[in-house]
Image (tube, rainbow, N blue to C red; front, side, top):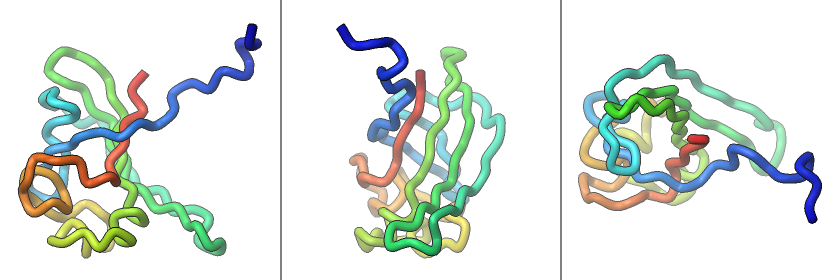
Length: 116
């Protein structure tokens, strides 16, 4: 049996995120967002070959569930995502159904959730 201390919790998993306006999420994995509690930008490891740049949102869905979702801005840039979301300085601009997809309802591979 594996000790409880070695079981990773809250690992990120890919998410389908629908955005509006300035790239702000309005739906996560089919659940409408009722409230955005906060948003922040994390930039780290910029001095390495694998920098980290993410825009996070802490949201509450219409069912009352708390969800932390983030957009991996480095992965989105590497994939050549098109549209305003891919070119935004802070990752908060854009629009359409799914950021970086030209409005198609599909995962772009650079959105993740850390919902418990």
